[in-house]
Image (cartoon, rainbow over all chains, first blue to last red; front, side):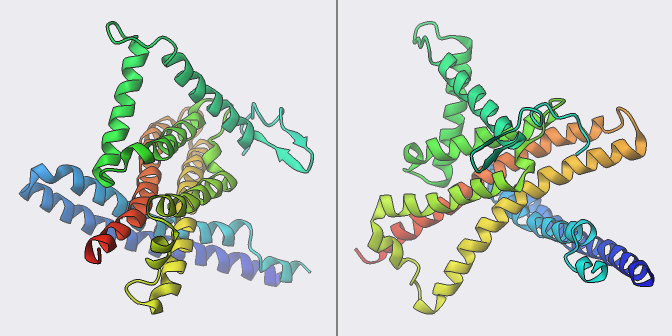
Length: 88
Length: 229
């Protein structure tokens, strides 16, 4: 049962660290994108439509990185394929 | 996920296929949208249009204008596909707020199916508008070395499209459930209000990305036509 304790501990710590880092960097990237878009909007308010459209698409692209991290973390926590080796 | 499921009890097997809650909710949505379209266009009038007709016309015009801004000149051809994506995904995301029902977009099978539709329609519209040869040639431009990257890009962006919608809807639902577990009855209501905004934004993004991918396939051909007539 010692192995199981280590496995649980390490996968929990790893998942928490992964989600923390994996969300922090996309958040920084999104912040940069939004600042730049607001700068562009302040300079040229008439370009609002195309700026907003491009901003949304870019945000979706960045956001999907965070979603990938979430997927991996959920797999590690709930459906870890490596668990089979321990339970055999 | 622990919630009472209206459609889970109605699930049945059709030969080798399991018709579960996701498929049944999708059928309900299809029926609702089709019924709305049929009811709104039953008695069309120019002099004194019904209120519903005016609403539907406004919606169609807004969708047309949004597509026209990204793919000028192709809006009439793209409107049926992209407009349907927008309406269906918005309705599918929002139906999760009805008690007893779950968003079918929180199921990976449905989002993968939608992403594969987008993947196929990119080629369909590209080949249909400019012919097979010119369309295939854009994979070899600007250099045949880039062919693997083109193919890789097609696959990963389709995967990303599916995972994005699924991950967003599933994580929203899961967050609401966790708040319900931690804080108790009625506590997740503010989170569900965020759900409304997020549902509409995700529907907009999915349709817009599909539109951008299709427009990219069309535009690369128009640029090529202009450069070597």
